[in-house]
Length: 263
Image 1 (cartoon, rainbow, N blue to C red):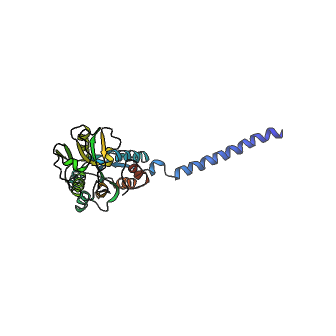
Image 2 (cartoon, rainbow, N blue to C red; image 1 turned 135 degrees about the vertical axis):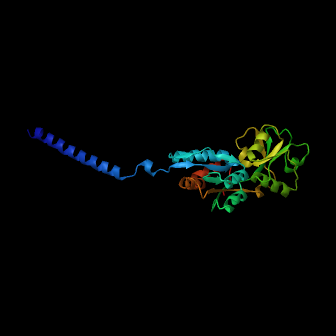
């Protein structure tokens, strides 16, 4: 008889304990912020130098994955001088990443940004079509009147760097065309429309249509890449978080993997 009466009593006590735990769990849940409440939310618009295309696509995807509430708009890639002009002209942008400090300074001088930070470096190589049909080997070969050479325009970071590299080597080149971004130079070389062009070392990585020749003195002409959240960024918190991500461990690892140097 004692065993038969003890079991209902035990079940009753267990039920009371379960109810108590349930209430405590409910109170704890209601008093703690949910994951969605603590996540960064907003929309991000980025203007970035053409040479950053692969790297920033990868960084943006990783940033979105870690911040599901953020919508990164398709990144606008172009020559840094073109992007700076658009920003100064009133383009609505959260983050600007330039391939040089000179074009970033234009934006700073207009009062549109403060405190840009360096996040990467890059150097130039001679890009030739696969197989190097013209037999280009040195910077001096680019001066051959029979060679079809394409360069970035002087106002573009890769163009300014190209001019410095050539001047340091005492070489004068008359390009067949002057392009507004480094991607256009690489595209013409890869398509066989040019015998050679000067592009960034990172541009040729993984591209089987071109070969790279590291010219003498390339290590002395270094492009430094600054990034900044614009003063009037439509989504300031998201902009600041993305800049921090690029400067942080994960962003730096992606850039290093793709051949960019440390800032």
